[in-house]
Image (cartoon, rainbow, N blue to C red; front, side, top):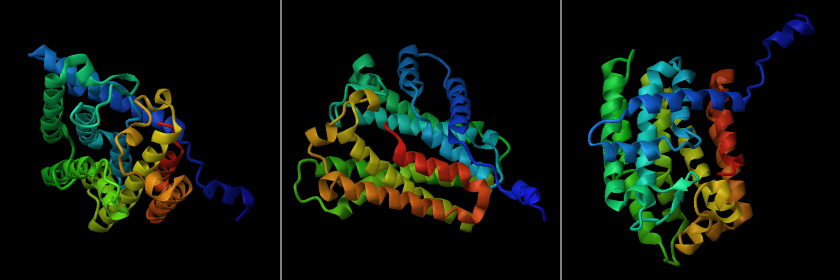
Length: 306
């Protein structure tokens, strides 16, 4: 075999930026179409205000990427991807409320309750949570019903008291306490942030018809990037500006929250995040070049500034 022939066997270098821009564009259009205005207009305005406020769209992109990894396509995964962003948006609306983390800005814009009031913000979050499951079940096409049901169950568990809600509860209960352990902090991050991220990745695999071993690999990948994501969030709350974050910087310090930098220091926190990302990427090596989008997204988590 000649050197030129060998060169043709080398997979091309994956470029994340154009991939992200393309997938973000697809997701933005799908979200806009998924939630049209209806009566009563005020609640739909509130829901759309936060859902269409921009952002990285990392969660729906992870859903699409994991579906594609196992032979599916973006059309099969898009309704599930939109549902993930709806639930994520719900969590942001509620997290920003005065009774929770009490923030005035999100994604560089006034938070929902600052525009529409606390009552409407609560209801907008409730509306998005319920609609996510309706849309996922109704709008998914080209996928056997048993896969859709399995994905709905997985997402519901990740969104409830055993996942996102439970993590938020322990986070609130831990504020101001000097004796929060690393184990408790890991629980908070694995549930408040990690559970939904894991569901994004695993549900994409479910929709594609992944075998149990594939779903286990995706789960391991997602658990690691989920914790890395939150460690970096802890770091950025200290090092980034409010303009970079699109929300108020330094909120964790003000609320006396338990964070990785607080417990381990900045250098060790950064090292742990990088170690988690490396482990996540290694868990997908068996898929070769097909895993490049998910592996590049893992690297993106530790290099982002918001």
